[in-house]
Image 1 (cartoon, rainbow, N blue to C red):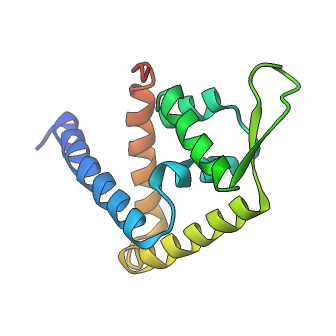
Image 2 (image 1 turned 60 degrees about the horizontal axis):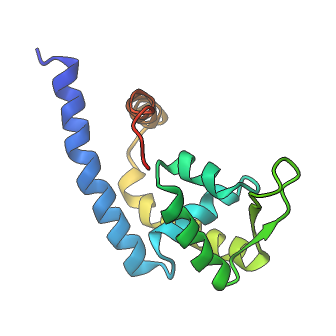
Length: 144
C-alpha cells in the first residue's frame, strides 16, 4: 500500500501541468490575461487592497500592482477610498469589469462541463479538501 505522502506527491505532479495548461487555454480562448482574470474574480466578492489580493493569491505585491494598473487602464477596475487605511486604496470592479468576469466564468463553465460530467459531488469535495489542506500547509511560504 502506498503512503499518503507518495499520493500527495502525485497530486503536486499533476497540479503544475494542469495549472500551466489551463492558463494557456484561458489566455488563448478568453480575452483577458490570467493575472487580470484572477484579480477580477477576487473582486467579485467585494473591494480589496492590492496587498490583500497579493496575499490571497500568494503573489508579490508588485506583480498584483502592475496587473491592477493594467486592469484599471482597461476600465475594468477602479480605486476607491479605503476608510481603514488612507494610503492603501481599495480596488473595486467597474461595470465593465463585472461584465468581463461574468463572460470569463461562463466560458470556463462551458469548458469544464465535459470533464466534470461524470464526477460526483463527493469527488469534488475530496479534491477541494486535499488541495485546501496542501495550500494551508504552505501558507508560511513567503511570496515577496
